[in-house]
Image (cartoon, rainbow, N blue to C red; front, side, top):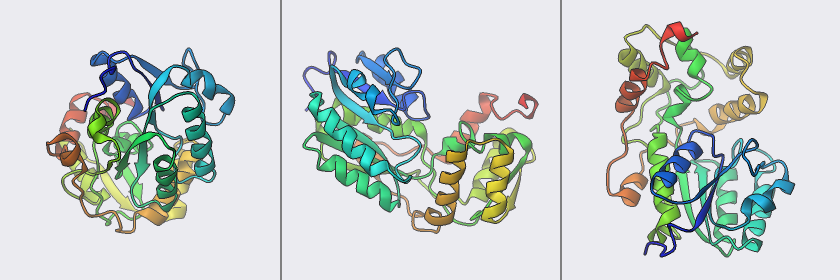
Length: 282
């Protein structure tokens, strides 16, 4: 059933300025739910790396959207998640909704920590975000008209951040989703080369896909001044996770929301219409 005190219950959205967290916070607020945005710059700051910020951020909170930065796959993430779940429980938090990564052994360990926390929980396990091309590390590549990546021939069912946020909000506000693990993907798998071609078609621009090795990939990201921790994470993902293990689609969006997931073509068209990929923005 829906939480009877939903409109009064405070939700902490960690990663509240990120790709999914900002959308979750916006949706909750639009539905009339009190929201505390968890970020280092918030009025009540929250920082995953500073446990001293956790207590104040968790005070009075009923549910938490747990979007760990930079990723559950990084060293130390399970220890941090274990400590955070304990702090949340001690603060009287009732529910945790965890953003997780698909095909990552480290993420599964973090999922198990949340599942064993003694709190109500839902897991939102996601494929590669479509928004990495428009709100992430690959935006500059698209603007430059040249996307150079390894594993360009491995299919990936890119998931739309709007779908992730919609599922997370449903889980945060409706107890029918308690104890559910939703695996979220788009409705079809595309290779990175095909995804870039779709963006090129949507923008009417020439955008080349260039297959390269991991060493060149890391060098290119560094040249574009992508933060070192993000470079390290992407190197791990492309070197380990993007090996075909995640190429199959999953039905998490349909199970959670009763509708189909957004298609990458729609993402490309909608995003192109915002002008964010206009070459003159450089």
